[in-house]
Length: 494
Ligand code: TRP
Image (cartoon, rainbow, N blue to C red; front, side, top):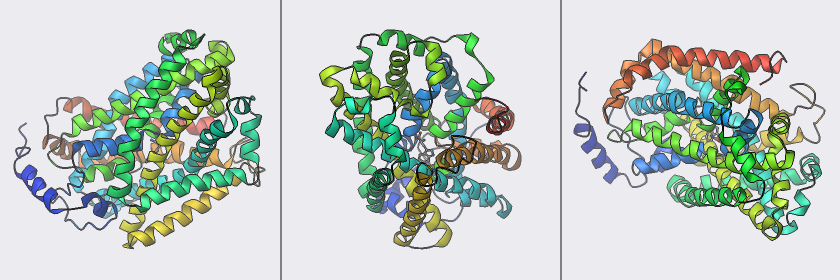
């Protein structure tokens, strides 16, 4: 089928003209002051394809890559998990990324408006997706605070103090004051950058932090791999063992994919709406996914061998790996590096800090633009509201480790942070993804978005994509949804 409009002609030149007349386009649109009519000329707010890819990558690469992915990989048999995850990202993940960006670009709206554009009764899908960043941001900033504290501690206390098998970490998060201060500091940095606006703050911050992140990630990976004993761990991480394939592994990989690619929470819809009609969607989303996967891969290459080193065998690694891997096990590996220990520890946590910060900025920005879009308030007022809500929720969730630790919402030993993570990540995100796939696959029909993709590039995988969106994706999502909930009630261990 030939596209009805030649890509790059009408829409492309319009877009260019628009680009020249808008001085600070991204800032304006993100602040929610756009009033384009639907299906109108593109808003064309990114300064180019690379600005989009950078921003999408900056939002994708975060604690999910540095902290969550490695502990899942360690837990689920190293190479087996890595391979499953890679397959999922480059089929299902890329398809959903494409769906969301195409939906955003087609409608020129952020999440709520994008669904509403096809009928008022669909707006609730956007509302559901938009609520997710408000739940993630507070706890994300708490973990961001932990990372900041670790980076600072390597500078001031050296590597030994942090490698005491968990007492340092436990003492810190259960203490009455300190963890709040670090969370507050992390939030403050995030809010200041968001407050500086998109062009002045966010784009510049990404431009500095993202390349620094890659250089540091490669450097640290090379360095840790040269440590004695690292090779065995690296083999565990890189060699698939198909006898380890399990439903839990598969479900874990799928959930991780959503979180890491920032899917199903309206972000990519919003980002797509700022994307010029002439930029290739297919190419851009493959790049974003590739970048995100690459960083996860490198983080795993540092952390999984570290776990191997500290715990001795693949079995022990699988049995003991969890959220504390980065904060308890990894410092033990760093501590063996002699003179270099404190430097390596510091650089590593600085790297994680950058990754977390760019994601936190993007999360906060999303919250601000949702409030601004919904209420019509000024950016300042919207921002003040977000700061108040996120700050208060952050204090509450953090209290789950100290003042309120008697609240164990998901069973013995669980915390409020676990609850926030569970509700957003395991319930709301799969639900939003399911509704989005049904909406596109069965209500508006994939053809609408296929046309949008074709505006800027050929779409070779069209048939596969349609089958994925209509059948495979909804089915997979139903599986994770049921499995996650079953896991919470102890029927299945994921
Ligand atoms: N993808 C981010 C990470 O891997 C986390 C995240 C989830 C996120 N949802 C988001 C970041 C929305 C920015 C916006 O850490």
